[in-house]
View 1 (cartoon, rainbow over the protein chains, first blue to last red):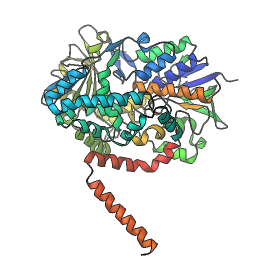
View 2 (cartoon, rainbow over the protein chains, first blue to last red):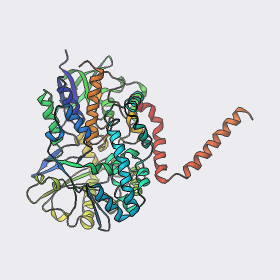
View 3 (tube, chains in turn cyan, yellow):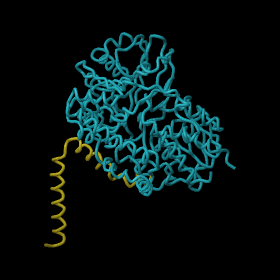
Length: 502
Length: 49
């Protein structure tokens, strides 16, 4: 008899969601996490009295999260104290001007009209279109398995309205934004959000153009830091007997007769189980933990062809004053073409933009939650645009200079005197994310999220070549991001209920 | 006209139409098309993962 019903490898949001849901269903669940902290990219750490978020910085589009907590017999609001963020973001132009965007759709309409009256009118049409598209996607493809063409047909049959929006997956974020907004200044307030999906506007699929609208349905910050979400999942899971072991790396998945039968730990011990849920990167899972010998040749080719997506470089900053910013998120205004060019020229050649031409995001979590820093102090997460493969250097040699130059530029031009008030700054390059979070190439969304890495072309939630193996996390459908990763946990759970005797 | 000639003629016509179509695409659509064409050979394998 197996030691556990289910072993979950990785305590990220996907692994914890499926683990807690399966435990709630009465299964004996063990979650194994290689690091000493839960949550993966959605986590928080403390340094000198300041609490910094590792990666994810806000929560929006909460329906998939609500779905998970509802299935656990509770609600998101009961488990996590959510602070609404309003204004939702601020745009910093390089000439020093700023625009602050409030949650209110009407106020934003007036703001856009002040930049371009015709675009101001079209803003309301854009909101109507995106509102309907968002409801349809959230009721269908974002919470259902999309492993096969049969799954896709079932999703469409269940919600035929999806047919109206499927062609958008072959258009781009830029197409949809430029269909509604003609002014360059207005487009500059909506270009950066495509990177929330890890892709530039030219490559990001059209449906994600709903993000500039979806933020107006609300964005929230969990009081105490983003780690409150995985902590809530662990709390719910442990009530139902879920076991969690930190600092326990898995070196391989035991496969016998084409079925996952358990795992081998770094110290050589074997733990057996009826099923395995993987929350690790699917390429790493199939090539390193399982081994190519268990994969048919076409699967092997497919696994190797998956391209890692956007890398993250982040600076965790503590300051001894209230920073001169206007919102939880502030980003440097950038045109769609500049973001596209960055990907087409700099990412491909490995030559980084100079600091004064770079763009990026400054996140100010203590604007929403002042408990994150000592009294009168604040925390900032500074996120310059970056990539993994550098030409002629490496991140260990390049990181400090890159971060210094970027902070200097912010301090001189956009966030006056920031540098003079910094109490500490901890840089984390794509290579650091790779080392500490086991994110190959520092890719926070795992693979690209373009049409060729979406739905049936993203690794399946139910393995197509190994029985009893289920996948969750940003490397599976519906992709990276807090709500979508939790949705993948729910999908893995529903696949197990459908295909296994529980 | 032989079958072989017809085939080559149709390939040439399709190629010319493709080039004309590509030339009139906006830059971001060209970038998307180039990216997707590079990924296209991998799709059957990805479907099996």
